[in-house]
Length: 118
Image (cartoon, rainbow, N blue to C red; front, side, top):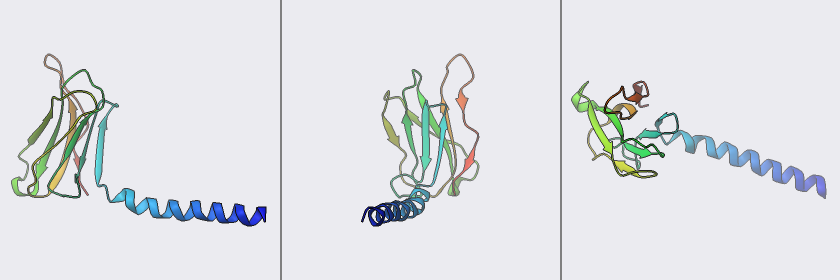
C-alpha cells in the first residue's frame, strides 16, 4: 500500500512538472537588473505590451524597448511609482527587444543588455 502511494505521489509530481514547463515558456522573455528592476514581454498575453516592475530599488527604474513597426527606435517605459509597483506600456505592434535599467542621474544607469523577445 505504501509503495503504491509513493508511486502515485511521485507520478503526480512528474506530471505536474511536465505541465509547468510549457506554461512557463508562455510568459515570453524576462530580464532583471540585480534584483532591482524586472522587465518582460509579452505582458498580459499581449505581444504588443511590456511590463516593468520596481523590485525595491531606491532609484527610478525603466524598461526600454523596440517595436516591430518602429525598427530600432527606442521607446522608454518609466516606473517612478516605488517599490513593488508595476507599470505597463500601451498595446501596439509586437515588442521585439527589451532592456531594463535602474536610472542614476549623476552616474551611468545600471542596465541589462538588449534581449530579443522570442
